[in-house]
Image 1 (cartoon, rainbow, N blue to C red):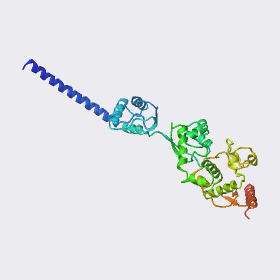
Image 2 (cartoon, helix red, strand yellow; image 1 turned 30 degrees about the vertical axis):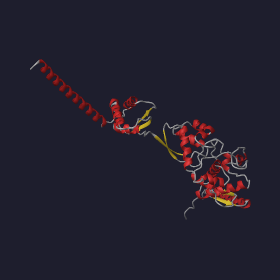
Image 3 (cartoon, one colour; image 1 turned 90 degrees about the vertical axis):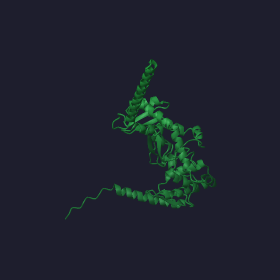
Image 4 (cartoon, rainbow, N blue to C red; image 1 turned 180 degrees about the vertical axis):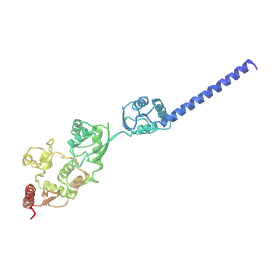
Length: 361
């Protein structure tokens, strides 16, 4: 065999060896990747909360996950990300994540790609004020109370989210929300205002005009109804009482308006409160107050736009959540005397000492 033939055969053997070695390496790498896909991190049995800052690249995310024990190998996770992108997967999203124990890498990647971040469930009851909303948001570490109050009172911010109102009181719809941990105050308030829009009664604009009201005035009235009513069936009746008093140029004389702008007020409302000077106090000022006194729910909004057709001008609490309604002041005064008498008799009965047990004969 010529020298050239020997060289050619040796070269062929070498290429076969290289090819075999390359195949072996590929198999080993493939096996290593296969093992990685089925191996959770070393986070143990605890849920791992991890923050992925905005702007962090794939390599940085992989290192964070490896350092926190969510995945076992940052290098392999980067390969998984490349493969996912090749298959049409989405980009990795920043945020705060909670990874369950023993999560395989593909599940971790899917959670980050779809942005399934930590959310906080929070409920704002009907009648909550802006101060209540701000306090609850700070308690849940979603926003600073001071920042929320500042934004809620900023007319420019209200206009920037499409609301024609000087402040957000009345428009932060009371509901249960799921907020992202780093969503931020502006986004939270915008979501609550959008929920208010979603729950406006159909045809509210035309109906408000029929009643001679603007939307803002209807919200103010609804906020008073929300604070006065307990029983849902009475909301349209209470709304009617205030409409009738407005038409008769009578002061609304609603107790909750007299104390709305007293920070930290927890009741009861006293005669001194009713005499204090405030643009919200409807004992001292005729007409609607200068703004809503709480955030009303949909039932009070509907009641304000659809008041009952009654002639009542007065109502007084029966001390059981219901009210007694009257058309005349004389009837109202009699009702007040009767209810106060029952209340005093009940209080006296509750305060009386129990009779000693009679001895057995």
